[in-house]
Each structure stands twice: as C-alpha cells, then as structure tokens.
Image 1 (cartoon, helix red, strand yellow):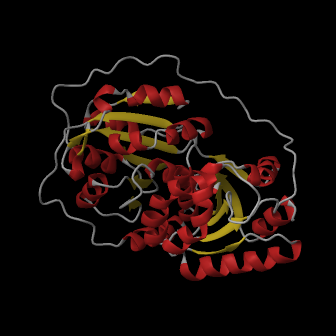
Image 2 (image 1 turned 180 degrees about the vertical axis):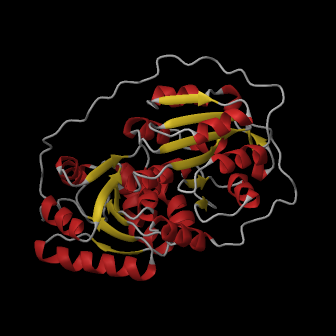
Image 3 (image 1 turned 120 degrees about the vertical axis):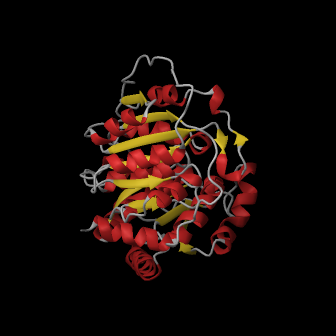
Length: 379
C-alpha cells in the first residue's frame, strides 16, 4: 500500500498537475488528496468519456493529465480513447480500478464480467498498461515507464489499480456550491429563413481573432470549417461524438489566456448532456460554446434528433452557464464573436439542415491537425 501523496507528488514532478475523472471508492484517497492540494487541479466529470476528452484537451494545451475512473465505467471511454487519443496521438495517464478482480475480494455482481475483461480492454485498444504500484519503492519506476512511453509514442498509458493499493486520505475541503446565474431565459424566436452551416461558420471564422482556438465537433462541422478556410488554430474532430465541449474545456483550462471557441452540434450535445453540467459548474471564463442546431444528424443521412422538442439554451442556463444567448442572424453571431469573452458563454443557433454533396474532407490527418495546433499554441 502506498500513500496518495507519494504518487501524486511524484506525478506532479513529471508535469501531471490536472486530474479528472469519475469517483470510485478505490480512488477516494487520490481524489481527496488532489482536491485538497493547492497546486493540483481536479475536474469532476459527469461521464468517464467526458473525462478522457477533458484530459485530451488539456494535453493539447500543454498540461499533462491523469484520468481516473472505476472499471465499470471503462466502456464509456472506449469511443474517445480509440477515436481521439489513439488516432490523434494524444497521451494521458489512465488509472482504472479493478472491481471484480478474478480471484480477488468478493465484489458486487455487476462488476464480475468487467473485472474479467478489464486488462483485455486495454489490449484490444492497443493501449499499453501495467498494474498500479502497491509499494512506495515501485512508484518512481512506474512513472518513469509512463512518461517514457507517452513521450515516445504520444499515446495513453494505463494503470490498473487493485483494492487497497492506496492508504486512506481524509478530505479536508468542501465543494463550493455555485448558484445558477440565469433565473429565466426568454423563449426562442427563430426567423422563418435560417442560415446555412457554411454561412454561420464563415461568420464565426471571419469574426474570430488570430489567437482564438477553434474546436469543431465531428461530422460536417469540421469539414465545412476546413472548406471555408483551413487554419492552424482549428481542430477538426473526426471522432468522439459529443466530446467537443469537454475537449474544449480541457484546452481552455490549460490555456487560460487564450479564448477557446467550441463549435458543437445538437446531436453531439444531446449525446453528452452531462458535459454541460460540468462546464456549468467549472465555468471557464475563456470559452465560447456554440451549439449549431439543425434538428438532424446531417452527416449520416438527415435522421431527426430530438432537439426540436428540447431547449438547449435553457438546459445550459439550468446547468449554470453564466451567459446564454440565442443568435438569430449572422450579424448577431459576428458581434458575439468579436466581443471579448469574459465568462463561459453558450450561443444557441438554429440553422438550415442539409449540406453540399461536394463537401471536401480535410487533407491533413487528425494527428497532423493536433501537432500543428500544439505548435501554434507554443508560439
């Protein structure tokens, strides 16, 4: 058994200062220690996949991340790990607990199957892993292997934690309760003729500053942004549907002096509504979050989403976003983007469904897009 401080402090010396995840009783000492530590940051995610995306965004922004969760939630991470981290070559240190360990202590029945397949999941995703250290003398060696692998391959590294690997640590601080800033939001009044995706993204790109980072969700958003004009400060997500806002949050946390503009979609936002709650609590002041809502899954054939029956702006307001606006014209959109962003802002925009048949795909690979953005961020 090791102390939480020995691992956290050794990890911090190697640059790991952002921790995110979903709690497990095995992880309680870590979470408590990081929350109490004045020089470490913990972001509690609503979903394990959101945590992976937050960590990925932080890594792009220059902060090493540790993502931790119970193995019963490991399945929630498969999509972002395989379609973001492994494809784009974005490393993170992943700590998953081993509930239902075969031959281990008796556990609840829901952990039995996941306990059997936890190591195999890492193998299937081609993510290198080893067991979490249980002796103080093992900590440095484990972290040396972690950092060497991540620096050499730019891929995640997994640690599987057995029961009672970390000594108890009692939490000293309490979570801050944050009031919902917006009590009421007027109903939407959308124009009869809506703008196209290309018109909206052109307006956003035109009004954005050269120092802004633009994160476009998977599907047509990234392809259209690329078609309007490819820029080094733009990241086109090709996978990880629903993870754009969490990745943008991680980037915003890592790059606090730079504005991050997230270009989200209604289907993607609906897929991971919990991300809005995490954002609404953390409230990064340098993030501008657009939800471009055409009420369909456009890139897969125009199947209807349920956003026609959902008020996404009111959901964001109820989640704690300090500023929520509805933009109905291109001039309103440009004015919002040109104005300084001093608090987390959600911009809900209804747009016309459909896209041109000759829409190009980016010629730059996902890995190249990430590498050039990381290089641009250091300039």
